[in-house]
Length: 187
Image (spheres, rainbow, N blue to C red):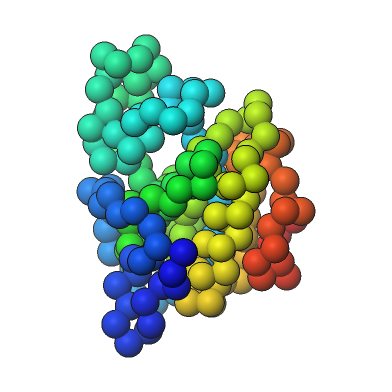
């Protein structure tokens, strides 16, 4: 995976990722430094891996007739900066310079609306199964690149910024396997 472009010509797109732009993003508020990384877990349909559901959700192309659960989330407009598939493949949906819609109602360190100042990383996974070695490898590489480019103060789970509302990345996410900038991990 190649580093993010240099600060002189930074587009916020990672050259080592597959790019699939999401319409579910907008500009960050003025003065919102990127200082937080939020780790999520997602599977669509729930507890199933490898299909097009996550990409379809993040690009507003999810067919509500394709699965009963999809009818429940019809019209949901969400995204994340990155998705790491079970095989370690990295997909980027939103430039790091833009605000992805991943955190929802959230708070960290006394600040509301974490989307304003965070980068969201989704891992293809669920609360019931361990993540793959390839995902940890890709995640550590991605974290190193993001932390090199931005003044990251903490790496947290979605459950940390939305307690009681979210559980991801879940009980099977092994925080001890994160090696990049470990002093900022809030665990």
